[in-house]
Every structure is written in C-alpha cells, then in structure tokens.
Figure 1 (tube, helix red, strand yellow):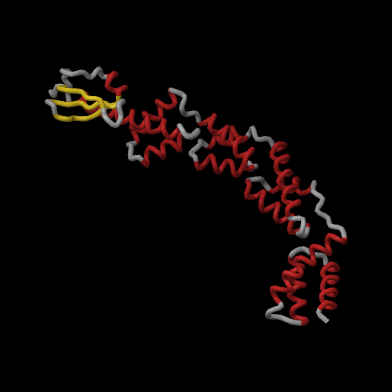
Figure 2: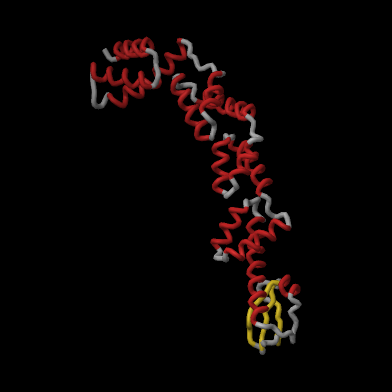
Length: 268
C-alpha cells in the first residue's frame, strides 16, 4: 500500500494540500478532508481509502463552489443543483454537497420562496401566476409553491392590481376607454393576475370622457390615421378607412362623424 511521503500546501489555494507518494504527486485535498482523515507524512493508505478520500474531496469542492454561488444572493436548491451540474459534478457528489448546505442552513427553499414572492410583489408588482412560474423555473416543489402563494391574499392582489390599473389609465389618458381597458387587461395578465381580479380592478376606475376630451383624443388619433392613409387614398375611400380605424379603437359613432365633418371642411 502507498505511503504518504510528503504533504505541501497549495500555492494558489492555501486551503488545499498536495499529497505525495514516494515524492511523486498523487492527489490534492481540501484542508477539511486532510484533517478528517488525519493525513500525515508516513501514513499508509489502501486503495479503498484513497477512493473514499477523493470522493469526499469532490463533495467538499462542490460544497465550496455552491457557497461561492450562494454568496451573491439567496438561491433555491434547484438553482444550486443546476450550477453544480454545469460544473460537471456527479449526481452522488451533488446530493452530498446539498445535504451539507442544508445541515449548515445555507439552503432553505421555504425561506427562499417567501423572499422571492415578496421581492416580486414589491419590486415588480407581480400576481400569483407569474410568481409561481418564477418558482417553477427555480425548481421549487409544487406543494411548497402553493403553500407560499396561499399567503398572497386576494385583498393584497386587488390593491396592487388597482394601483397598476390607475397608473396605466393616467399614462394612457389620450386613448379611448376601450383602448385603456385593453391595455390594463393585457398588462395585468402578463403580470400574473386572473381575469376575475382584473375585472374588479378595472370596475373601480372612471374611464369615461367628457366632450372636450373626446374631441382632443379623436383629433390626435384620427389625424394619425389620416396621415397614414392619405398617401394612397382620397375622398370617400380615405374617410371610410379612417372611420373604420376609429371604430376599431372604440370611438363612438357621433364622435367619429364630428371629426370627419370637421376634417372635410379643413380639406375643402
């Protein structure tokens, strides 16, 4: 059986040690592995023990790699597993490294999921469906997803959705109620809110326009359509095309007719 003839400290990483048999380099180990197996000069090692040491050292390297990865921010178990797979560690090594991380409280999917949910709510105003998709991508267990999202009440969802709806309505004030309604619905759906909650959020908004607002809005959007189609169309065909476009945008018939009458007078 080989006997350790020399042990030297690593130059690049002082926490690793080089093991020599008959003054020839054999392998290197982490300091924790060195201590655990009491590796000293003159110690005799059988092949089984050498393989066990190398396996333990791989676990330690994977564990250290995971700690470095976790140093930037909280991660889920799934994210850590994926990172270690990318570094080409074997499944058995990864499993053992993950166990160590849990033992030392460096991994906690419950805590991670709760923090992820709160971050997504506070920073991105996301609804439960979008947050669930984020959890799914990070490998969170389905039951845990449900348990964590159960704490995101409908009251809180509605309050956030209403705030988003109000901001959109203010930003899109030069649009028709129909356009604003669609914009809010599309945005809140992308954010992960369900249809019934979106409906409640919109119901509390006052999207109606007075006569002056309708005139201002139809003039802005009508003129854009007029310029767009006037290169190819004239007369009745141009008016029909603009009228069709304004109907599709949700303008009332009387507002469209007033705009077109005014436009006709301008072009006489």
